[in-house]
Image 1 (cartoon, rainbow, N blue to C red):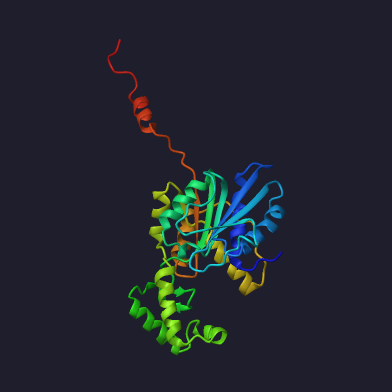
Image 2: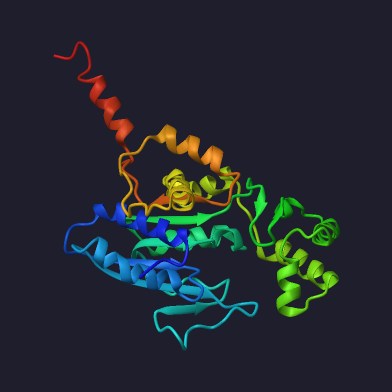
Length: 294
């Protein structure tokens, strides 16, 4: 089965690479957070057993169905439909892996998302999220530069209208498909940017991870663009296993550069090796017996 997008291939590669942490023969439960119609779930279900035959995989997903989003419950029994304010409908520590594809820029309450992520993720598990940061130049929904940086609603509507008059952005697609007039298009999509997108900055994403006791990094961001370049320019099929040996400096340089492009990979782990009382034990050991004691 072929992937519908490079983002699907990339998230599969991250899961395949990091699944080396799970013992052979174990069952790995995967959650697709904000799964839409389930295309990524279908791809993972088809490819994970082939690429990691020593593990058993169970893939589920949920979709937020407020604001007219399609309700897939009748079509896909493995998709749970919830409201935006609902807790995720899973028990604590019930998943080994959580992924999301182009979801975090639409989350209205990121703190709620990260809190639920921490709750359902098992200790020792990991999470990978592919999404654009606030730093990106190109707003990927309207196909207009910097549209997501304009918070003044009147100015945003005027910008969308003017850019559309010059043939920029997605107005032409909407007009041909739906006959949407320009004024209505500008009105609707100014509201879409204001109410249905919330782009996080590099620091905000890492601060949210820290606040919810998750190890945060942007591991595998460079690999995503390497995959894009190999496919688009060289017509070569990239491998589905990335090199697990990391250079923290290379990962940091990659995200500093690619955060201005269409997406980054936020990698999270639920793990904490520090034990409270360690410093006190070290101090006591270094002090030793009191001098002069008989």
